[in-house]
Length: 189
Image (cartoon, rainbow, N blue to C red; front, side, top):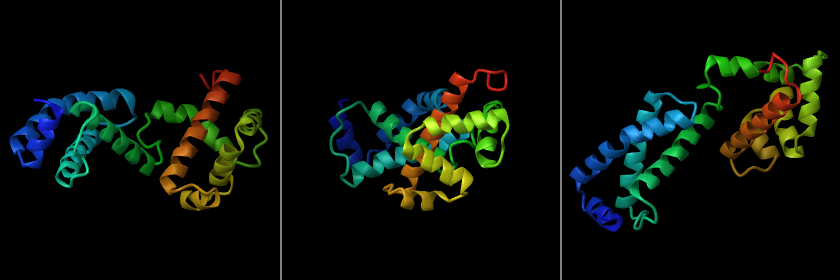
């Protein structure tokens, strides 16, 4: 069945076809999510149900009238955005394993302690200064000034809080990478 015919059938309310689509891609989506994102299978099952509903609603509402990609690609793209939304709402680190969380906790601790003069803290703060101006501002506002993400979004002219959270996450990842590559001690490795 071609992509256009699938859309037409779903628009007519073909529940059998919707069920087939649901079953055909569920295990693939869960495997994809587990491999690429710090989420568990239960959350992925919930997201998958939501993405199937969103897919179907988009067709019924006339928002989706043509697919330029395969149904699978379209579903996975919706799913990816839903995963990111969940991660943003959880501030990106709730689903990290304890090992990953512990491995980089000292970076956050160093950022949270403005007066800490230890060698590690001083090094981390020097790496922070190497980041771009916007990254420095976001991380300083969040960790030192303890500002909320909505206040940061407004102060730095982000279009919304989710954009600010995404940027904060990316900046923190840059900082972690910089610390790891420039200070390769056992505490980091």
